[in-house]
Amino acid sequence: MSVGRTHSISLLGMTGAVVEIEADISNQLPMFVLIGLPDAALNEAKDRVRSAITNSGLELPHRKVTINLSPAALPKHGSGFDLAIALAVLAAAGDVSAESIDRVAHLGELGLDGRLRPINGVLPAVMGAARAGFGTVMVPTGNADEASLVPGVRVIPVASLRDAAIWHGATCDAIPVEPLVRVLPALTEEDLDLADVIGNEDAIEAMLVAAAGGHHVFLLGPPGAGKTMLASRLPGLLPPLTAEQALEVSSVRSLSGMPVGSRLATRAPFEAPHHTASAAALVGGGSGLIRPGAAARASHGVLFLDEAPEFPSAVLDALRQPLESGVISIHRANAVAHYPGSFQLVMAANPCPCGQYGARDSECTCTPFNRRRYLARISGPLLDRIDIQLRVQRITSAQLRVSTDSARMSSADARARVVAARERTRSRLADTPWTLNSHVPGAWLRGPAARLPVATTASIDRALERGGITMRGYDRVLRVGWTLADLDEAPVPTAEHIGRALYLRKAIST
Image (cartoon, rainbow, N blue to C red; front, side, top):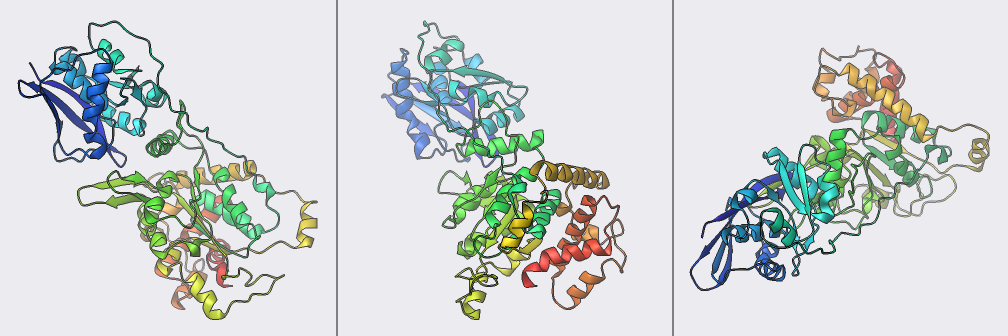
């Protein structure tokens, strides 16, 4: 008997690697051997494949079956290799065309009755197959819509192993089966309007600036000041996702087991993990299979950390590298997984453990030492990476009465301003690799291409000399200043823009 050979895709982070699956049947005592560095879930494929072949009305030879997953040094995880293993065995037995299965990448988990179960990560896996040159991919019927989102790839949906074998030339009659589909909750996208925010004009401007320039935000204020309300409205101010961003966001959702359906995501994601989240839950990780965390799921959107001082310091500091590079790298002894990490971070915190310090209508019961220790849970290096740091206050009854008579900016109006400002930024940076002010390195802003007059930067020059801001903070104020200029349709920032940018960074200490 010949060797059956086909292919599947192994995912490491967002990267799909082609795995060649070989099956050999030899005249030895009946047994099923799986080699090639499989994990526990993949090693159990031996029993799933044996039962699925038998219950599909096909014949598994009573000989030794050896399955090799190549390259052998690449760790392989999960049950998505079942379909490819079963077809390789049938090709070695001569039941299906060896040439046919060699041209197709196969993805899917087998049930004991031979039906195919949908799996996570089909979208990035099909993208990996397309990049490797495969024009045809066979997937479970429950993953067909998701797989079809990848352009230029022919998707063959099959409900069972028997159907897959018939497609590859097996001489048996088709038996209709009920396909297994995954019932996933529909994504609910609330229309939260910025017009709901009353008072706090500085905070509304801060959200507008953050959306226009892609800046990170830290909101400090007592309970009831509207920090969560402001953060939850930031995604509605962001422009719709581009085609490339939508594919990336949908791929991360697929890896996380979230609904993808037949359409790519178009709105910026919003993730708000609880303060009890671990570092693995926040940035990704896990034993064995490396999974994306909340920060990866928030890529091209907003990651909101409410009650930020309540997060463990080590968990918060795990965000420092993604904030600088825009990429989440998770290192293990035998592999490194990379996920997108270009999110906007919004952190909210009470000013003290009791939450009332600085409130106009309440008295704080915390000692100065307790207040300092509480906010010190957010490390200085992490806070220094936050462009906008703002104090928000509870609104007064007078502000509430005035707000009913005055028009407030809606999310649609704010989004239009953000889109226009981003277009001006993109046009100005057309000859550079950057498209957002928050991505521009400080050396370029201080260089000949964008250097501002001394009179314009006098305020931040003094702040730097007096130790009020660091060099990183100096560059971040410049970035916010350029965003304010783009919002005001000014060709370059003025001294007023730089002063407002410095206020938006140092307002929590004023």
